Image (tube, rainbow, N blue to C red; front, side):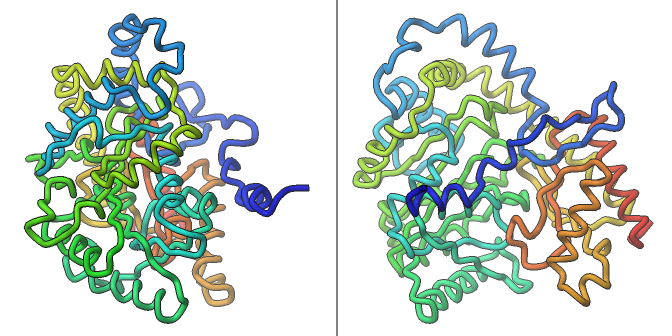
Length: 428
C-alpha cells in the first residue's frame, strides 16, 4: 500500500508518544495522578513568557502575520533579532548577521534537515553516549543515515581525552562497517548530563573534524539555561576562532531555538547558524517544507527585540533552575540515589536506579530487559521518565528526571521514586 519510504515512517512510530487518551496528571486536586518527568520544558517560566506574549507581543501583530510574508525561513527582522541575541550571549568570534541564520519549525526539523543535507543514505553521524534519545528518529528516518555511538568506558566524556574515543568509533565504523561518517553531533549544554564542554575539549573536537573533514553540529538549545553561580559554564562553539587552530569555518554549525531557554516549545521555532553558504542554500530550499508559523515568528521577534525583558527573564529563570536543581539533588542525596555529577545546565538530572534492577532478570535476560521491567514498575507508581536505553547509555538502570515542574509535583515525583528505590533494596 505504501512506498518503502512511507513504510519506514509508518514503522518508526515517531508520534506514538502523543497518541492515546490524555493522561490524568498529578496536581493539588488529583493527588493520584501521573507525575510526568517526560518532556524537557521549563514549566517554571511559562506563565512569565505567556503574560509577555499576551500583553506585549500579541498586540503588535499586524496583517503580515497572516500572510506568507518574506518566506519560509524567518523574516529579516526576526533573523536580525536572533543575530543580536547570539552576538550578546554566545560571543561569536566572527560577526553573525541575518544572512547566517535560517529559521524552521523547530530544532527537530533542523535535525532532519541537517541529516538530509550532510549525509547520503548509509552515511554516519557520530554521537557520544548517553545522548538525547530522539536523535535516532529525527536524523535517521528522514535521511536513512546511520548513527555511530561512542562509548567512553570510564573516561570523562567532557574531557579532551574523550576525543580519542570518538576517533576510535569513527575509525571502527569506517574500517569495519564501511560507514562514511560525515558529521559529529554534540549537545552543549548536554542532554541528559546537564554539563557544558570546556574550551579545550571543543577545540579538540574542531581539530578532529578538520583532520577527517567532517562537520561539527553543536546543538546549543540550552545555552541560556546555565544556572551555575558565576554563569561561566557555557562556551559556544561560535566563540572559538577556527583560524587559530587551522579549522575550516565551513565545517561548523550551531542549532538553536525558542523551546528551551524561552519556555516556548509551542512556538515551534528553531534556527541554524552557519557560515557555510552551500549548506545555507540547501536549508533555505528545504525550509519550504518546514515553514514556521508567521504568527510565531512575529511573537518571537517581539521577544528577541526586547533586550531588557530577555535579561530579566533569564535571570529569573536561572534562579528558579538552580533552586529546583538544589531541591532535587538534596532529596536524591538524602535517599542515597546517585546521579551524574556536575549538573549546571538544562532541566534534568541523570539518576542511577541500577540497584532497582531485578537480579534474576539481569542474570537470565540481560540488564536491558531488566531496565525495561523497571520502567514498567516506574510507570506503575505513576511516574514518567526517559530511560537509559532510550538515551543510549552505556549501562542500564539510568533515568532522566525533569526538575522544571512546580515544587509540589517535583516533591511528589521524587518521593515516589525514592519509595521505589528503598523498596528495591537501595540505600535509605
